[in-house]
Structure formats: structure tokens, C-alpha cells
Length: 402
Image (cartoon, rainbow, N blue to C red; front, side, top):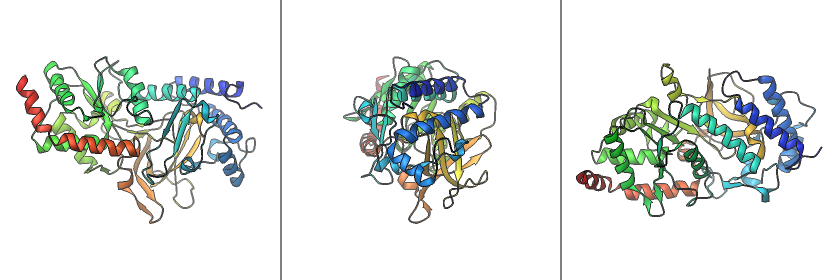
């Protein structure tokens, strides 16, 4: 069998996965998922050398397993030790590093070829429409991140640029520049939205929002964003959202920005996994459902919660390690065993921390800023904290001109 990048096997697999994604979120076909997962496993077994050795150690081989649950899940640590690609690395269209939150000096290498980029854009584009923009074709975006031109090696910057082009209006802008946070642009945009009544979406890391909200609280600044405005944050998926609790975070978004909790969508993104996992709250609110927050598992993925010692699935509601099977991860490997701790709920899962292997404790501090890349996290923290010291001065200056 020819498993090269341009082979009929790979192009056919990509096309079939795209068609499966295009079916949308309803009525997932378990038999079809299983077929595509086994085909993906065959490809990865024969093209990703470190993964093949791992599977051989586990006694797993294509043709000898019948269910996706039997496919060995490679530990996320493997991405730090090896190049885990199903294609020649020189053919990569995406190439960047993971956050390195557990070990900043040992980051994972993430690469995707052209077909893999098409898969990730199709899948995450559909999810973004479904869970962030179910009621708007386009909105003005304020992106509290650098542009891909400024940070080409940052997965969050690359991904959000696709989101901006798909769903943003021409007035959408990046707020992080080489000189720091463009505080005047941020504040004037929020005041303009108040005046015109045109809703907008603010996107960025949870930590960045925490710093901004606390600076506004300190200086007595309040906004009332128009109805329909929303906040989309990545990285604060712990009980502690950076420097405040989850409850405090949503309280501050309501008091400082006038954005209710059901219009605050948290996103779990991991470099080792191609699919993003979105909160359900905005879509459910628009459907008249009560507030009950969890991460949605789209039909082209499966998430298991496994015991931290036996790695066997645990019962629903019990905490364990999250294991993801992602058809969109064709460029790398289908099955990834993370060291994130979470639990399963009826319609999805929630994440609550990271397993700290040497002490059997949750390492909250290590992942509070995990979405985006360690260098970028440090840069954003520095630029935000420095510039936000003058939020009150800049606000009064802008307000005085109006």
C-alpha cells in the first residue's frame, strides 16, 4: 500500500473525513467513525515511526483490531521528544510549538501538511459557527492576540486569523502590537460599540481578560456592551481562571463589560489535537436551555476519561485523564493521551486541571495560560500588565474627546 502524501490512500481518507465533517453536529454515524478511525490508524502506523514502535510495544497492529477504542493513544509527551507527522516534515504548511507549560524548555513540535490544514479549517470553522456565531454571519472582532505576521509560530495567532477571515467584519483588528497592547484602540472600540449599539466579539486568552477586567475594576471603568456582544477566551479551563475563580471571572465580565455568562464561550485548544472543544452555553442559551456549561465533543472526535494509574475508562462523572481520538489529526496521530484531568458529563466533558505526575496533584498554575504558547504567554502578560497600568488615564483621555 502506498501511504505517501499524494497517494490515493491519503487523498481519499482526507476527502472522506471532510465529507463526514460536512454532515454537521447531528446524528453521528458510529460505524463510519470507526471505519475512518481504523483507516487513520493504518496510515499513522505505517508513516509515523515513533508511533509504530509504540504500537508494537502495545501489541497493536492494523488488521488486528476492530474498534477505535483499541487504537493506542500516544502520550502528549511524545510530541516533545519526536516529530510526529504522517508526512515529510519539509512539506509542512503549519509549523509551530505547543505551549510548553509543563516544561518550558521542552516544547512539542506541531506540523500539518496542506491536507491537514484543510481539515482543521473545515472542522474548527464549523464549530466556531455553531458555538460562537450561531446568530451572526459576521461580527467586528477585537483580537487580544498578536497577528500571525508578528507571531508566525503561535498556533493561536494562526488559527484566529482564519476565524477573523471567516467571521470578522473589515473593522476587526488585532490589539497586541510590537509596542504592546493597543489600549486606546481597545477602549475606543468598546465606547464606540456602546454608542452605536453594534455588538462585537472580544477574543483572547483568559489570562489577558483577567488582567484587563481587574485593571478596569481598579480604575472604576465600566462598559455596557450592546446586546449580542460576546467574549471568547482560551486557556482558562480550570477552577482557577488565571488569577481569579471561574465564578469571579463571569461576574467581572458582567459587571465590567455588561456581557452575561451565557455569552462567554471558553475554548479548549491543544497543539497535539487539531479539533477545538467549545463550550455549549451560547448555543444552548439561544435555544432557550438553562445554563449548564460543558465542552462539546463533535462527531469526528471521541473523548474518554481514563484512570490515572490503570488507564482504563472510568465511570461517568468520575475525574480522570482525558484521552482524545480526533479524525482531523490526520497530519499527526489519531489518538492522544493527555495529562489533563477532567470528567465526562451526559453530552460532553469538562476539564479541571493537569495531572502532576511526581506528586499526584493537579498542577493548576502550570496550565492557567496554556492556550497559545509559552513565549507568547509571557509576552502577552508583560505587555498587558505594563500597558494596563494606565487604563484609567487612557480611558479619561478618550472619554474627554467625545
